[in-house]
Length: 437
Image (cartoon, helix red, strand yellow):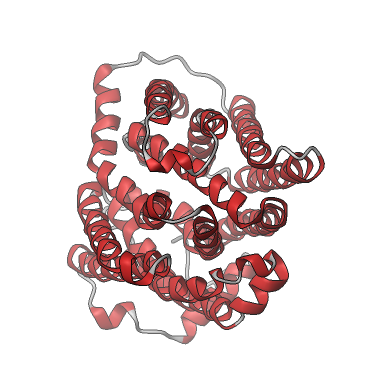
């Protein structure tokens, strides 16, 4: 696994660089927009993100799977993903434009101009995220890491300039995101043009349908996965004021940043698991254990230091976010580990199973929000999200055991070898006893 952890080191390095710049961006937004402005930005971002996932129908993960497994050539995958992305973006933007002109309370949390501007995030977000993942499918991890850092730095600098200097407030933050995503997409496309000579191919409806079918099987799972993360913000946006939305959005974002660890690892795992008939279950278990230790440590520190961290980094206006961070840290710890099992299911051509599992978590989330929101206020969103994460994690673990044939004690059988793996993640090498995994 020497090469695998070197690639993880590159990917994690990009995510860490992005994390630092991303956290700096959150600080800029907190001090520049205040709690109410941060809440308005959150609803605009959630609005565009939901539209992307609803209309993309999992084509991004479909393209990634077919390229990783060798069923599509590089330029075939780019063509099919790009074509579907164009249609998806148009449909999403038209739908979004229509919704903005309704009288739903959700759209009273930010100006109409801000919501209209957020529509341009749809194509830019879709293409930038998909093409970054396609780079990892062909194992261009160094390029992916550098472009990830570039995107985060651009967004940080543009946010500072447009929010603090030009005083464009929420609109400035949205423009910064749009421009950063557009440059990210352009940089990824340039890498593909320079690294891979174009080879002619004949587009076929059957290939397009196969990718669409794969994406469709994971469609509800992908939407549900987002819903577990953003459902609290969506529901709170209907019933809470902008400051409360800002508190939860900040707590949610700070804890989500920890998920860069499993996300970095799944990027490396996915192509390896996809081409292996047995899905490399031993590798998956070892990675899952390392993630549990790493993320559990970070979340513990977040929970203990939440109050001083929020006060110093984001101002006293955001102090109500501190207890929310502590609650979200509980569910985040177990869900980070479960993300490795989720990636296993998707990479072994079981996207439908993964979809059903994550959908169950969403139902738990919605039910608890409905029951707890009148009693707990914005804290209900944090508790509902944590409960959904725990339910999802238990089911994903059981499904991994079922399909891989592994046993429970094997999953949690920590050893000195795991400690070596964990250290090797950050040394970009692995002990020689573990070869070519």
